[in-house]
Length: 254
Length: 332
Image (tube, rainbow over all chains, first blue to last red; front, side):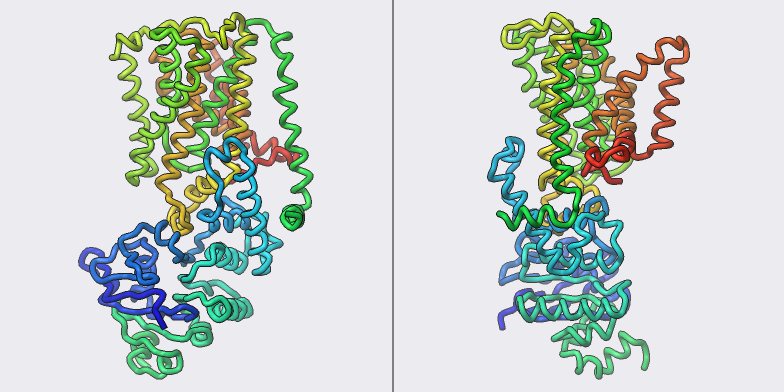
C-alpha cells in the first residue's frame, strides 16, 4: 500500500529542546494511525510539523509523494491535509454553519469582483456552498444547531462541527488532535464509529492523537508511541498493549 | 436547486421571512430623498457630514471589527482620500465626481501600505502604535509637501460638480453623497456576507485555524485593509467636497479618536453599527450646542454611557427591537 503521508527522519527543535527526534512514520489511505505518548512527548509538535505550523529542522514530510514540509499551512491544507485543534479550533464568532462554510472556503468559486457586482455565478457558488454545508451538518446529526454561534454549542457538538468543518472538502488525510477530550462516554463511542467509518468507507487516512486509550485501541489499525520526541513503538494495537517499553513510557512503571 | 431552497428555509424559521424583511432597508434611502426640502443649509450640512462619516466608519470597522486587528491608520486613508480629491480638482482641474474613484484607489493603496506591519506578523498594541505612526507620518507629508498640499494652511478645493452640474447647495451635495453611501453599504454588505467576509471573521477568531482551512490569511488581511482604505478614501473625497478645504489638522489624532468612537458606539464588526455610530457621533455635538462650555463634557459622557450600557454598541440595541436589524456580522 502506497503511503498517503510519509515522515522520514523528522526532527523539530525549539532552541536546545528536541521536541521531535528523528521520527519516521507513514499513514496509508483508509488507515487509522494513532499517535500516543505521555504529555510533552512531541505529538502535537509532530502534528504541527505536518500541517505546516511548525518548521522541521531535518528530515522530510511527503504527502501523496510530494514534499510538503516547506509549504505554508494554507497551502498544505489546500493540498488535502486537514486538521482539528486540541483546544477547540472553532471560530467562536461564527455560527456552526459559517464554520463549515469557512472549511469549504477553497471550494467556493465566488470571486471578489463577481461578489461586488452580485454576479449570478458568484451568488450561485455561495448558495450552493451554504446548501452543502447544511447537508454536511445534517449528515453528522448537528444540523439542528447550524445557526447557533459556535461558542454556544456543547462540547460534543463543537467537536462534531469541527470534524464536519475539517472534512468539508473531503480531504484524503485528516489529523485529529485529541478529539475525545471532554466527551461523555457514549459520545466517545459515537466518535469512534465515525472515525472507523471515515477510514473504512471513504478511505480517508487518519492520524489521531488521543489519550483515551480505549478509543485508541478500538479504532486504530496501528499505534505509534512517542516518548521524549522519539518513536518507541509502531505496531497494531494489541501488540502495543503488550509492549514493555510502551508500558514504561506511557503508563509509567508497571 | 429546489433542494437548495428547501435546505435554506428549513432549520431557522425566521430565515426566509427575515430576508423579505431586509428588503425594507431599501426604503431608507428612498425615504431620505425629500430630506433637503425640510432642512436649512446648516442642518443639511450636518446631515451631509453624517453621510461623510458613514463610509469612514464602515472602512474602519472592516479592519477593526471584522478582521479584528488593532489598526489605527484609518485617519490616514481619510486624509489621503480628501487630499487626492482636492489635489486632482485644484491642480488638474478635474471635476469632483471624477476624483471620487481615484480618492478611493489612493485610499486602497494607503490601506495596503498600512497593512505591511500586520502582514509581518505585528499584532495588538505593537500594531496599534505602528499604524498610529503611519497616520502621523502622512500628516507630516501634508504639512511638508507644500507645493502639492498647501502645507499647514491646506488648500481650497474648487466647488464640486457632477457631470457638469455644479453642486451649488448642501441639498445638491446630499444627493451625490447619498448615492455614494448607499453604494458603499451595498458593496461592503455583499463582501461581508460572502466567503471573503467569513474569512475576515475566521482570521479574527483564530488565525491558525483559518490558515488550516486553506485561507491564505495574508492575502485576506491585505484585502480587508485595501477595501477598508477604499471605502474610507471615498469618504475623504466627500469630505473635501463638503468642507471645501483640506488641512492637515483635520486628520489628527483627535479625528482618529472620533472615528474610533463611531465604530465603538455603533457596534464593532457591524455594518448597521457603522451607520448608527456615524449618525450619533456626528450629530450629538450639535444637540449639545445649547450647553455652551459643557459640550465636550456631554459628548464624552454620551460615549461613556453608551459603551458602558451597550458594550456591543447601538447595533445591539436595534437588534433587540426587531430581528431584521440583527447584523449577521456583529459578534463579539
